[in-house]
View 1 (tube, rainbow, N blue to C red):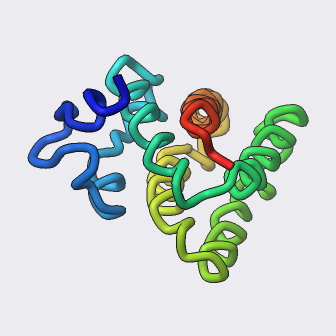
View 2: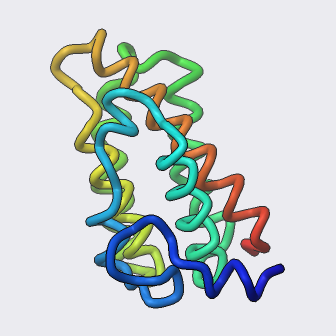
Length: 147
C-alpha cells in the first residue's frame, strides 16, 4: 500500500508527492484554510506535508512551535497576541540553526500571516483555524513515523 501511495499523483498541479521540493509546499498552501477553516483539500495537504516532514524533522522540532501555540490558545489569543507575533522570529532563528525546518517555516509563515492581529475577533477565529491545521500536520507527521 505504501508504494501505491508514493506513486499516486496528488491534487497539487504539476508534480507528484515525491517530486515536490520545499518551494512547492509554500505555493500549494491555501490561506483560506486559516481564514475560513480547513477543508478536505487542507486535510490532504496536511497529510502529504506531514509525510514529507516525517523524514527530515523530529517531532520535537514541530512541537516546540506547536507547544507555544497551544500555550497561547490556553491563555487566549487576545491576551497573548504579542507572544503570537514573536513566534515568527523565533521560528526564523530555529530555521537558521536547522535547515530541515525550511519547508515547515515557509508554510507556517504563510499560515501565520493569514491570522489577523489587528482585528482580534477575526484573528481569534483564524488562530483557531491555524491550530486545527497545525494539529493535522503534527498528527500526520507522527503517523508517518516522525521521530
